[in-house]
Length: 478
Image (cartoon, rainbow, N blue to C red):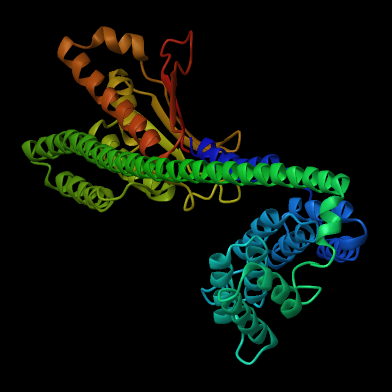
């Protein structure tokens, strides 16, 4: 689930740039190429206005920097003014003003602003709109640097407007030409009538103007679509981030719940293991006390003391191990030896036993950890349900070794065997024996589950076909 979430985030992250690339169809030009286009258009302004407009159109489509866009619109306005298209010229000057980059929060600080206002004032004046011309000259005056030539020119234009407002139209035409001169800052006045008469040039310029207008509309639509896609993608990303956080919170909550469940289950298993172990100990203690009681009843004080001393040593070891989950195999072997000494004395003459401890070079009993009292129930079962029914000659062996690299313990007796033992027992004895082995099997199952071990038990007849078939129990200890 987490993998799918991160893949989705990566897909969205790559989708936005891809969508932007798909929408951005304009050709990208290097800065040197854009500067070259501006220079060429400036040189072709008078010789080939159509070509100059085409070059500027290419520059505008390339989405240049703000200052370059301002210069392009300004030059377009100059060209339109040259051919007598003052309305178009004013429109381009207005677009140039809009493209002026903002510096320190204000556009008026740009050096382009006063020049553009001056050009717009000249355009409005030539169209006969003195009011708009006065407003443009006033803006030029307010934005031009103090004591600059632009400021002086703006003051002169305002003075001319004041003079034109107080004389007749015929006189105004004469004053206009004399005061302003043959060429204004935006375009040529002396040649505008001739250019206006050139209808072919007018048509070509207007055609290029239409191309630019359509291109600007395409760019505006493209930018609007890009903004829409960006807003939508941003919203989707925020939604994905929110869903990711919710999913992460859910995963953390599930992890915490599972952790608590595992801890609770682990605690329950530990309690159950302790309970199973405590249920085994009283059974052994009861049998031992019965043996001591028999010695006392027979007034065999010496045997009772000897037995009680061994029993106390065994109980001390059992108590020492009661709070531990695992003990070294060497301790388990020592405890098993004490137990067998007690049982052999109780069933005098019934059996002999041998414990074949592993050789240190084969198996280090101090390094192998086993659950406490793991072997004792099987040894007890061999004695009480197999060997004690023999008249004599019983043999019990406990040996340790390695099978497939895993430590094993094998308990072998030549008792009467499992089948004959079941036939001799009463129903109550069968029930008690079954409970004891069920407790041991449940304990091994819990140890494997709780501690990740792989303990296993295999029970079989030791000597099939013999009079006393006996029993062999093989335990995998790890």
